[in-house]
Length: 216
Figure 1: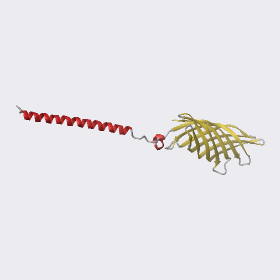
Figure 2 (figure 1 turned 60 degrees about the vertical axis):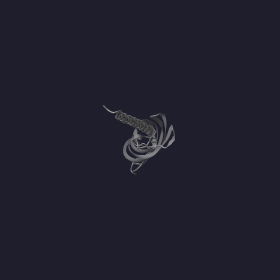
Figure 3 (figure 1 turned 180 degrees about the horizontal axis):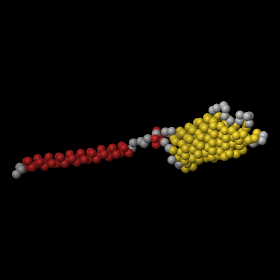
Figure 4 (figure 1 turned 135 degrees about the horizontal axis):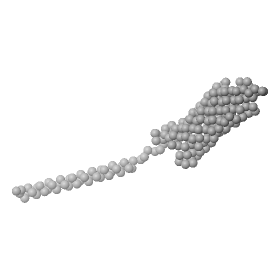
């Protein structure tokens, strides 16, 4: 049987072990709470620094009109207005303030000058910059390259001549877009096209488009 002195020593040792365990548990709990609080209070990455998160897809349509200037090899020249529709798709270039767009325009065949009718289709690849005006509106500006397929039908006396031209052109544009909803914008673009070759019947053109664009 244990002596009284031995029993007192055992009780003291057991009490010291329980107090140490309680203090260790309490300290560990405080450390966990502090870590969780520090994680919650870490600043979020500002929107301007987002990279892949800023990549969004765009698509839309628009109504377009173009003032076209032409000159045929046999000296018939003039200008006129064509009306059509536009479809476009695009993607942000790692920023909400820059975008690449691919556009297709088709214009109805119609008279554009005395005895001359035209049919035009156009593909364009452009880079768009979007300086912010305010929370609801951005400017649009940029440029690119277009491939234009122009078909002309011109009457000369009793004869009607047909002309065809596939022309590369440089483009420059200005516009604005206003937010209708969080993912929908609406606004006009005005652009200029200039032929990159000298032997084309398609000389130059001014274009105005009223666009609707959706962001996904």
